[in-house]
Image (tube, rainbow, N blue to C red; front, side, top):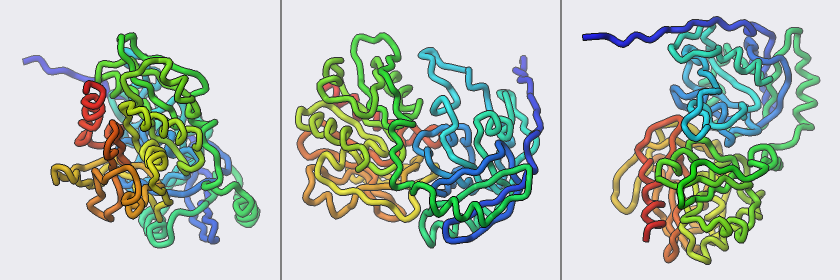
Length: 386
């Protein structure tokens, strides 16, 4: 029997061991070792409990404006693959967007040596190229417990070749734009329409920070994917005569996307088969008279249990969101509860009571994470084929 052999590539980090400080807006300071790019950034600090998938996570537009803490203790050991590796539609295979989306990265230990058959560069090298700072040597358990008890907050991450002036950065942090006030769509949404595939029937993806995997799943359903800017009008969308519409995931407060909410209202009114994912679910909720709110510390990880209330089955889901739909607001809305979170009973999925509209708060496309709920895309296809 012939054995397949893969060539294993190994690389070492070359930008690590710089001065670094993680400074919270309550004055708490963590000392660490810097890696990646030498700079100071400000953003909302959050945590993700996933064990793998940092290439996908760091390029997920939902993390735009945030300093990401990874709770898994060792990060970077398998390096980073080549961003130029694309699928048949020209979509990057191992990245969720074309650029790194996070403001900064917080980890316990950086693997100084990366080894993998698909290795192109180290995590340290990738972050340096993308001009994003990272800090290691941090007690990420302490950071996570702090955020769980006090909620997410603004923070500064400073990496420098020289000693860092903490008091100066504290003053700059106090003047930094609050995450909740940031308008992210200009940063994460496409500026022009993009088409993937040449199938006769199409699905429009409204890009409020869409992951590549969402577009890929639309293609796997057998439809041409037409990706449009976040503020595209209903009439412009319908000019494509789509079989259905997907409202994508993305960063920030859904109430900062009024144009998308207005479009969603018209999609619902005209009974266009529609699926909302993450931020898209919140936008659809607002369009159907629910209310949204900010979670204390969000749901970010790959092992979040959700219950499908129609079947009473529990699914393991991938999640990345800081806002949600108020459960009590469903009673006076046009939606019924579809999925609920088994941990904290938050809303994880809704279905319109009369129209062809569904939405989930988790990521059925995974990337990274389990594919337990990939069938949600099949539910959209059923609506489109009615």
